[in-house]
Length: 248
Image 1 (cartoon, rainbow, N blue to C red):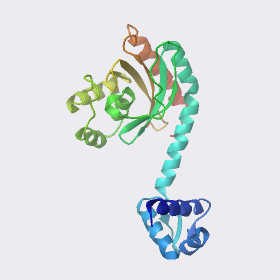
Image 2 (image 1 turned 135 degrees about the vertical axis):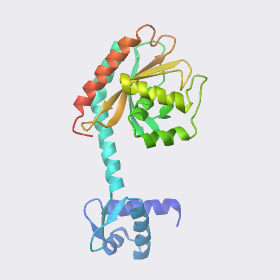
Image 3 (image 1 turned 180 degrees about the vertical axis):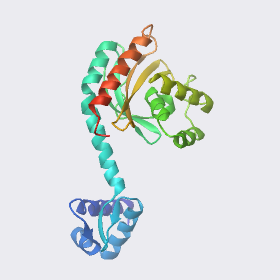
Image 4 (image 1 turned 180 degrees about the horizontal axis):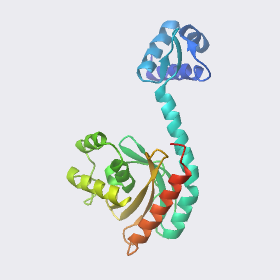
């Protein structure tokens, strides 16, 4: 059985379980598979946490699928709630404003509002970037547990520019500053001539769920106005945190 065929059949099983728990025999019948094939695929899905077995050998959607769905719902709500804040930030700063969320060891950029400047930074929406190279990622690391940070820093850390900070001791000091100040800066660490500042967004239980950020060419951003940008992005992130309370 090819990988594509197996994936298609596994998806069909998950789709069949979307409405109600079903037995192995009923699942096999609904998706048109031999019972032995359905059992093998269900075993794999169960190991991955995509489904779980109930008493009486019925199956239902499992915790990993529910968690993924919840995460997607949170991102969509964050995007909707952040729209006005991003527009206001971009207008105030005359630079690009964005929203990103943590995904594994990376920050996933999910929204951006461009600036009115003739020279702009690229649109980062859809990009997934290493945490240590972007201001939003430093926030994510600062609010992670110690084990996650230790494992992250023990891995290979990309260094795309001469200004990239990759020494674990230096990064740990930066994380302490983030927790003290509530914001993070990166200066030409992902790409030369791009600076960024970010502030954290928290859910009702205090969990870090994402970051608002401003970024622009180093030749003009932040210039002499870094304290103004810090103040404005902290205020915007605080308002967004209040707006999403109850969805984290």
